[in-house]
Image (cartoon, rainbow, N blue to C red; front, side, top):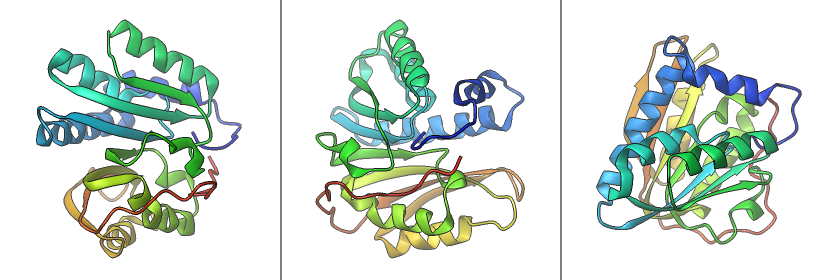
Length: 214
């Protein structure tokens, strides 16, 4: 979460645990993409940032299953304090090291100071809750969060009007190459993975990526 909203974000996360929910099915696709990204850097310590991380479901399950075979330095940025607390608890119970949950505004670049450039950037559950212009702006600024050849994993629903074709084009224009695009269909979710081919850019302090509408 990146800005104040009246939605019950803790309750919203319960669908992750429901195997029949679209959110759970999307989670499985995202986690598979995370595993692939980690495998591509096997043996190295992987630096990760997660934008609007919630309770860290995208990462915690993967890292718990990997045990000590994967080394990470991850900053998970989430504004809802209860989600931050629950995420920290989940990571602690799973015995995962290297995860830093911070209760900050993920929509401002200051939240990533000291955690970038990252090898893996997660932007999941964001693009469907911000204006189209902010989606494009965020994509254009992602090279500021990325190390060379970093991967970005993103999600977006495909309800009409389907923005995913534009999102894929904006990634290409921002210097990313598409590695995969998985869709549950015209009314379902989409998960994209893009790899930075252009040169990373330095982080601009105090810059706004988006305004979270909820």
